[in-house]
Image 1: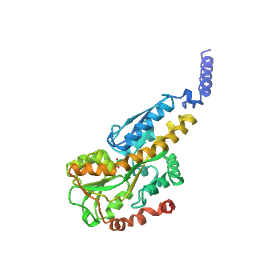
Image 2 (image 1 turned 90 degrees about the horizontal axis):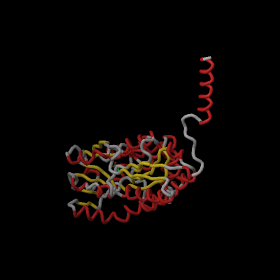
Image 3 (image 1 turned 60 degrees about the vertical axis):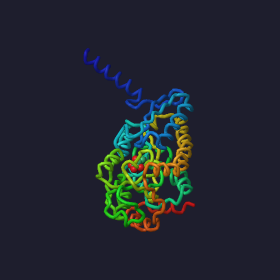
Image 4 (image 1 turned 30 degrees about the horizontal axis):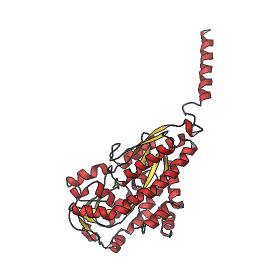
Length: 335
Ligand code: EAX
C-alpha cells in the first residue's frame, strides 16, 4: 500500500513539474504582466556623460512602460572595481545592464576589438555612420554568443594622454613612461609600439596608482579626465585622440529573453534615441571641459604630432588587425 502511494505521489510530482515547464519561468506574453527592477552599472563618476545618459534612459523606460520597468543607475564602480568585473556580473545575470568602454568587452567577444585600433575613426560623423549602421549592429549581435544583448553604441570618446612628467607631443616624449591602459591587447600593443611601458589595470585602481606614483600616465577621453578630476594627479594633457572608445550599452541575455517582445523593441528604440543625446553631451562640452581643466592647473597640449603617433602605432594593425581585416576595411571604407 505504502509503495503504491509512493508511486502515485512520484507520478503526480512528475506530472506537475512537467506541466509548469521545470525551472524556467514561462515568458509573459503581454507587457502588462511584466515587471522588472533592473541594475545598470558603470565605472565613471556620477556626473560623467554615461550616467547622465543612463539616467535619461531609465526615466524614458519608466515613463514608457507606465512604471513597470525601473532601472537604477549605479555609477563610479559601486558594483565592481573594473569593467571586466561588471561584465562578468552581467554575464551571470547579477547585474542587468553595463555601460562602458568597448575595450574590455573584447575579452568576451573578440570581434569588437576591431573598433579599438588606433586612428581608425576619422571624426564623429564617421563614428556615427559605422556604429549606428550595419557594422555596429553586427558587432552588437555577436555579443549574444557571450551571453550579452547589445542594445546600442553610446560613446566614451576619443582618448587622450595625460601624464605627470612632461608636456608630450611626439612618441619620443613617452619613452619608458609607465602608462596605465585598459585590459585589451590592442591598447597594450599600441603603447608598447609607441615606446611607453604599458600596465593594464582596472579603472577603479587608476586614481590611487597615479596619486602614489606607481604609474606616470593614463589615457582617456576629456569627459572622463574632467569628471574624475585627474588634474589633481596629472599635470599634462596631450590631445592625441589616438583611439576612439565606443561605449556599448549591454544587457544580460537572460534578462533580455525574459522580456516581452514589445518591451524588447522599446529598449532597442530608446537605447538608440538616448545614444544621440549622450554623444552630444560630451561632444558639445569638450572645449568647456578643457578650459576648466586648464583653470584647475592642467597644461593642455592641443597641438601634437599626429602623423608621428599614427606611424608609431601602425604596427598594431599587423599584430592584431589581421583577424578583423574585413571589419576594419569596411570601417575605413565607410564615408
Ligand atoms: O569606460 O577604463 C577606462 O579607461 C575607461 O575609459 C573608463 O572606465 C570608462
